[in-house]
Length: 186
Image (cartoon, rainbow, N blue to C red; front, side, top):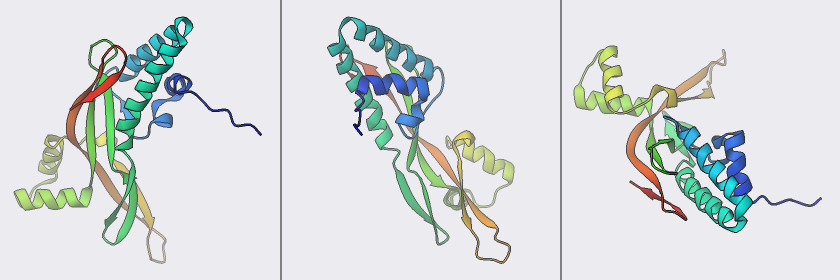
């Protein structure tokens, strides 16, 4: 059986058609990011009809740029209360920034909820559930990005123990189009 290798041009086009997370782990869209990427891919696909070599170079550059962001989202093992969990070390949200073929992004790093609760207790002492939710919001933690991980318990009922992993905003950045390549700025 012959294996057909896919060019980055084909992969970039397929990433829009099938969904970014299938090709670039940890990346997701907000604020028109998907539309912006679709526009860039449409530009590259149209350029391929005129100048395939240049289109492939642009696709390679875009692929490498998205891959660099995705590489920061590799899975890591975190031990909480003696149990090991495998979670993405970071998540990236990509949005539209209004420039020609450019994007904005925000990087979020993982924080186990139990550690987050400990940090807030150290800083603020006792607090109500409402105060906890307010402090978490102010820290830049977005509820929709949270991940729940389960492990089997060691009891007769077989209940699972759940740990919540939050993602805290770390920094913002931009992916800027330079005419023949993209560059990441933070």
